[in-house]
Image (cartoon, rainbow, N blue to C red):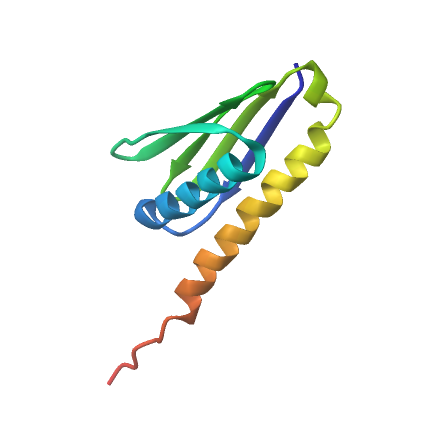
Length: 110
């Protein structure tokens, strides 16, 4: 079975990373018909996702995301396209979340 592995570092912290990951899970449920379940932990969460021909997990930590997916034979031919789509969606959501941080007003000293 072809595999997809994505590692993406960030500086959001766990609470904000959770929001990004939950938005991602909503997206893959709607767009790809995935079934997602969330397992919350103290230092990281795991979102397990599955549908016919796909099984994987997204580990959400305060400083990174790790996604591992196993594709069945039929979807394996589209592994690069699927990986690209998943990565783009995750990047878009991270850019939005990271942009919210940089757009916050900075306090002046003095």
